[in-house]
Image (tube, rainbow, N blue to C red; front, side, top):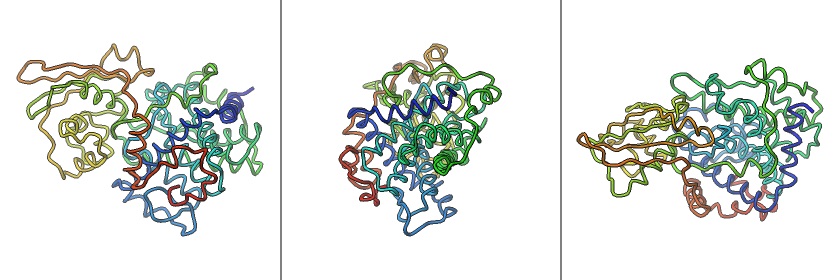
Length: 422
């Protein structure tokens, strides 16, 4: 069997066998990403980009936006907005932001088809399984060193597997959908600033995956060996053997507590653990991260764009000192020069000991210095995920409405009844 055939079979099995607890985890992802999409709708990049996307009064409504969109545009808009605030969940070992691509695809297509909540949950499980497994087998975080963003590379496969479940595709058609989604694999990661183009890539990945599934349903044919020989030629290594079977990959996806780059989550968690240490002007905070974090974390003290602010260790630490690091508005206001940040120096260093555990753990060490002496040190290897109640409360606050119904997808008879949310 080809790699794509294995991914198709694996994603379909994960969806078919998803028990109540796995579907609950899928609902958790949906709630989390709904909040991220609604938050992203107010992002400055959204205000610049959304006028370029045509609206459809009778189309699918995206959270946080008043207008409807054509199905493929709704998928792309939702997936783009989900990632803008860097608050979307991530599978660490695969370095794959599955939720940003999978959930908007599932919601838009389920809404258009009036699918049940249970089918929506199974589609979310399938999309995570296919995309994460593809990234794990084909490099995962190692792709950063090749200038590639794993979510952009394998996001189309995740979206295609998601759509395949909702469209009722069989094994052969699902394999074809993943193959069609693989024909344009790519997704460069900038060597300097991420830029707005980086965030548009999650939307492009979702749109490509949806189109691939629809094409497979229509009978389009394509080679199913694209992840065998060609990927080895592109990446320099043949795909790794399949991951062990067992719990679905969805179970390893971690939520973010703060709307900033993933490596900074551990740094902020470590700072939060320094009880009794209150940062003040003139302090220095040393943040030690895995070397690979340098691909998407900076020490820029004055970013002029909110997406760059979310990647700045300086902005995140100063936000912690101001008590606002968990607010998307903090990063936007800093970029706009609309807030006075605490005068705290932040130095970023590589940590060889953290390299040894990366990417299974995205850890951080922090050290607070004042007047030439160390006030405190702390480390965090695995930030505690938000509990269900806290996640639901945050998502509801970001969405501006109660998302409690979405915390139990099995209870939703058909998402068409929830168009104002989905």
